Length: 394
Ligand code: B12
Ligand code: SF4
Ligand code: SF4
Image 1 (cartoon, protein in one colour):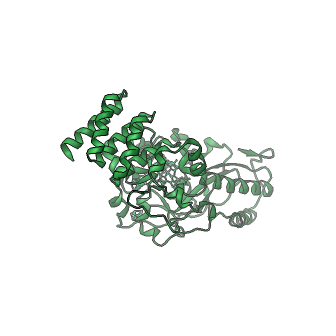
Image 2 (cartoon, protein in one colour):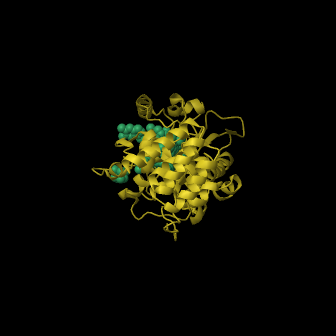
Image 3 (tube, protein in one colour):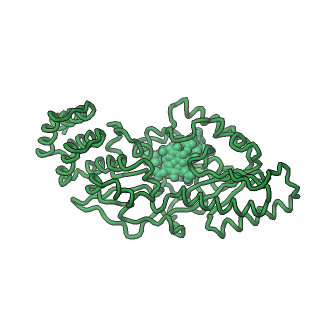
């Protein structure tokens, strides 16, 4: 929390002065590259509260969200002096210029757009910091607290109330100008800015995102079963459950399908936030070299991306699944190497699964040999399942 002076509980500004200050804040925000800004009341989010409890009851939570639902829906629990919330959005690109192509024997994975370029948390926090400094200069005594993603509030619910956009059936906040390709953040303030009006738009009869979701994770319009969502599954550190492994495709981190198919995103590609322009070799990396990437090289290639927060293991495991997706025979040797030498059971077990899906005599031989040497129960289980698949299903 940024407290510069003793907090003034009651500001002595009239409505004209408040409106003028709001205009100045909007103007300043655009001057520092914030694409959209909106203002909301700090009233409790009561409808969301009901949804969140229902969500928990059904087991749909991802576990990445703040656990305390009261805190999530009562801004005053984060900041007792709160009078308003400022929401911001920054647009990110939906297309890569000259993307490298997958070729036979040199297949590539894909990082979700939210992991392209620099970590959005850093970029948005920096913008909010600048905005806080501005507010503290303009309004002595103001109290502010900023959040991006990891804060307690629902960034989408705040953005929705602030008039930045509306929430679609794919659960994303969709802005009229930038589609859903926006990152969100917010600032609680003790100043009574007047609220903006929510955007009145909806999906109508469209169900494209629901129909295209590879795992059927959108259980009803606007509600997601996180445990089925590929964006969630790619971030797991453990094994990905069998039934979802094929659906991962060549996704290394996150999933964009329900946004890519959305008609509200058609022809939308904003590249003016240069921090989010991807390095094609990191956004669409070759798969095989990822299997043996060192910690140091991973940090230098992916460390600035928001996709690196879970470390290199989930991305390496997903690279194994992607090699199976492409049925890349040239991957049998490096996968055999993983199965024989990687110290992490999840990597060895996933390699066993991938070898069984790639198939062929060589892969089968590798699995048979590994079965006798393997000490870890989960890996042995994967090897046995793999051999069974090759002998009976393939
Ligand atoms: C946990 C989390 C996840 C989880 C769960 C996502 C989810 N939909 O719940 C996982 C890991 C799966 C995930 C994935 C992604 N995430 Co995420 N995630 C979060 C996080 C930290 C909390 C979200 C949360 O509380 N979810 C619980 C649900 C219930 O709350 P909510 O989504 O905020 O709720 C809104 C809607 O879902 C809807 N709703 C909820 N229940 C119901 C029920 C009905 C009946 C209806 C009609 C509506 C409805 O109303 C709410 C708003 O009023 C937020 C940051 C934050 N602090 O808010 C980022 C955030 C939502 N993620 C973001 C992004 C970019 C993504 C991905 C696109 C990344 C990627 N490419 O892989 C995917 C999108 C997947 C998807 N379809 O949502 C952005 C979204 C920006 C935007 N334009 O909407 C956020 C806001 C981060 C940020 N600050 O920019 N994420
Ligand atoms: S991010 Fe992918 S898996 Fe998750 S709801 Fe959207 S399309 Fe489905
Ligand atoms: S794809 Fe269709 S249903 Fe899904 S969010 Fe976009 S407009 Fe709504």
